[in-house]
Length: 130
Image 1 (spheres, rainbow, N blue to C red):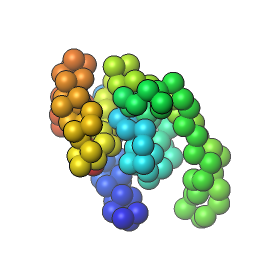
Image 2: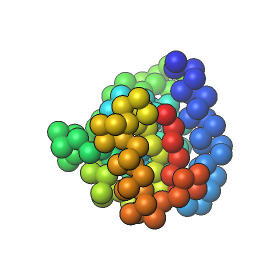
Image 3: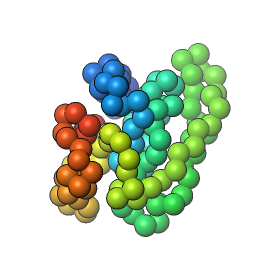
Image 4: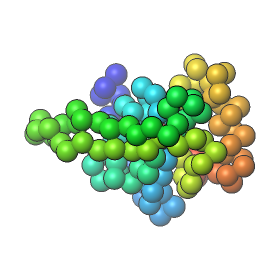
């Protein structure tokens, strides 16, 4: 699973982050999948993530800090922190990390509605990672 996510993150970096519109972006999903995706990104790509977005009121307004990241040499990296914003407060492009298995609980229908309202276009400024 971890290798698959690393490969997916690397492909996302090559294919999507070369687009100037993705100078900064938000990761939709402040749960397991979103956090794992952010951790799998390279340090350069991770620095472009401005926030995690979620609809869960218990997560919105919190700060997510990862203290366990390690570099390629195995050395512990400095922690990084991201704010968790409500999906209605997303600004800019979005990488969606909400498992489609859980889409019914505020997933795909909500994603499409919010994306349309924000003017996001699938395959351009909206990418589904999971």
